[in-house]
Length: 299
Image (cartoon, rainbow, N blue to C red; front, side):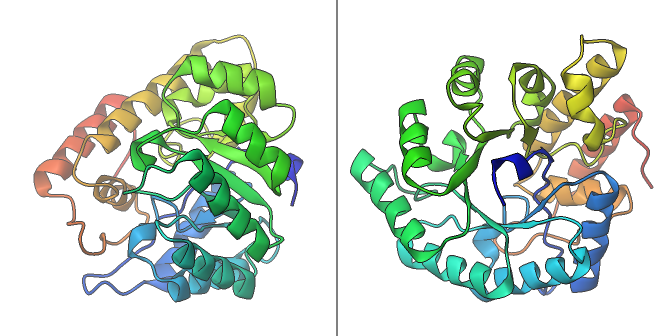
């Protein structure tokens, strides 16, 4: 897989858990097929939507294998390997290697650590030494506690098998300069879904984002609409993406709202795994009101 293969709609699939915390594999396959019906060009296992923090290396590997078996070569499979410690990341790399993942998604050391320049580079040196699989960087200042600079991204691109980045900066100054400088050298994939449509016009190749699961416009059609002069279809899609993102990110603990929303449209997302609690009825009513306002059907 190379940078030209990373484009379009790359959803981070939810991991369906039952009330006892067990993975529901049949539901996972149903969700996988739903995402392909929406035009997914690749599917990411063990991203934030998949509750990566609650998945062991063995479970990640098993989900990759289930996805590979379901895909039958239709789309490549990405797997998240982000972790605070290098030992955990390397265990995830091993699971990805054993089960046939095509590409790896990695933040720097995450969630509790603000890496120095030397620590950042050392982390990716060790990951790259452990695998020949291509890497997609994940820049999420909200989750990392800091942001990759464009210089750091370029250094990682030049020294490792990096084919793209999931860019979750919420700053269009940053996006503009990243795309101008590195957009021809790597696949820049938008994170926050309210940036999807305008980012296409600036040269983004696709998106790894939450929200396109529910929009009227198929995610597979967003690139074509996003690179044209904005019209009614563009504005409607952008509004839906924006309002969905605000609601989903502002309701319950992630990804409880996302799972509840999927369940409402008939997709078997199950419930979150401990320590996240399911969305309350008040949360679900809020989701329904947003769906009503946006004209999104649900059961």
